[in-house]
Image (tube, rainbow, N blue to C red):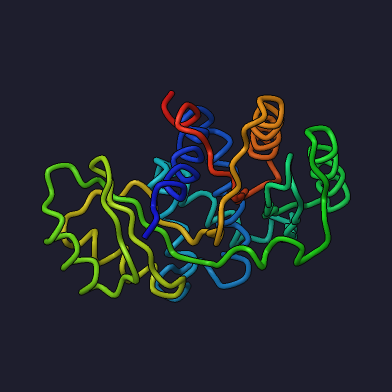
Length: 247
């Protein structure tokens, strides 16, 4: 599996959240609230909620915060209704971008997303214009420090993973989306330290930018999208240069 660029994207996302924990707490909290309203507040009977709780914990969201969000969403006092929308478009030089949002004001969010694309050298497209370039995969990243690659390979395939790679003491495991929970839970039981576990949109091919202005604008586009409270996830097929990940 070609893990380098996938890990770039995940690492960038993790670094962004490390620098803005309050914002990521808000975004995960919004996902949990929607999930509870749709499927109930018991993670034993709501597998998606169980996944989101695991995601929240991997992002160091305190247990008290998680419990409070679930209780609020289950109560009658929370009247906020969030709508899920997906936007597709192109960044500078044709970089494919998918933006997943969760908002209580679709018009505001759509205006913001269009503004970012227009301002930073891209254009918002129609539904389906870039999503065909991506496939949905479960991606688990784990700490591989001191681990034997053959043993890791045995463990991940026994648990039902599709593929895996090890690079720089980092294990990247690929699963089918429906297998993510089982593989994640199995790895935890085996004592692996997980860095992230999420369903990601993985591009089939990557675009390289060489023009400095295009790189600057692409960075600004991603930063503005990721900084927007209504944006839950941003996926793209930019093969980010080494200088951007080593900071």
